[in-house]
Length: 432
Image (tube, rainbow, N blue to C red; front, side):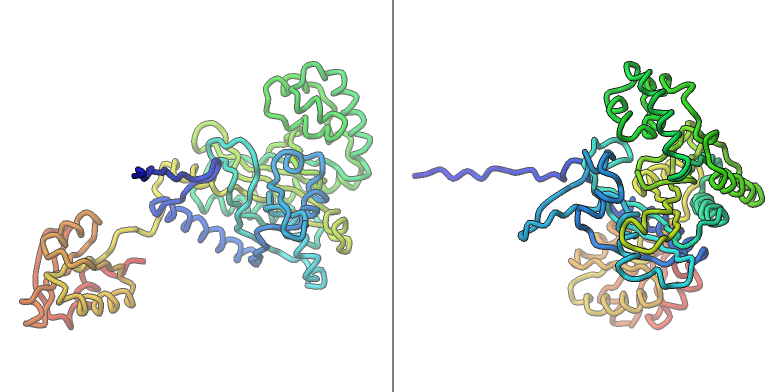
């Protein structure tokens, strides 16, 4: 006779993904509420794009030499052999939607924000995952530096609302198609003389994407690029004026900044303004968000010439840093306001009716659905950290009453059922 042995199997999440459990989800909901409110105050409407796109959307826009395209995209073919990709970033999809849905005919500027899920195949590390979430905002139709200043102000507004106080804005201009090519040649010549001192990735970037070398975080490369040509010294008159005006607007808005000539951002479509916002609230500086101007991307993707600027922040990293701030966040509690303990299943119908009434009046309410008895129900209420335990037994029902135990004050009394809501309103108030 064959021996059928049932093997226990352990299922685990995929590498680079994570579960967001209720205790952390309340922090996410708080952060998202701040992001949505701030976006609305600044005139941004939410846009939601598909989870996957045609691969060419990103190969064309992000750049075929970028790490995203060469190393990180999740590419696959559908049954019709179309080349598709799970979205690795937000801007290209938003631009595709802007063009495809004829948003260029709307009054300018067009302001859009997104809260979305993205995928990149990269080495998972603290605060960074292969499946991750971002909030981003994009402004279309204005090339004025005042647009840059307002978008940066939105960034600062959001971060201060979330509780970050010690913020640092890094600012740079990487020029345009007029002034960048001659600078690029000078930079390539400089980097060729340093090729033996650069990391493997940067030595390969010299000819294809030399600006990325300036942004490399490897200490070896940072030491090698000391003395490299500075983009600000090579800006054309228009870019120089744009950069100068932006700084004046930031001064008037009392937004402090530091000019960082090594800041370039990682994607090919950026030009002129690029920026990052960092926080020193937790000691060493932590980057919270980054963005920049991309005035030629809409046209390159089939739309009319449309200047644009945007930014994005990684939400996993944001949530991680929020949890480390010294001041507690104003989070909605997970704990029930009321827990209904019942003597037996005979009281379940009434318990469900009472719970429905309480919930309609904004009291978070749970029930002992398995009817384990009053004593066990009280134990559950205490473990769930409920504010009040409502006890329903045969005696209470015969008298049309409910017994209420204030678990914090350790007081208990019986009241008529019809007085339950006024009693709770007087004693505890609704939970927001």
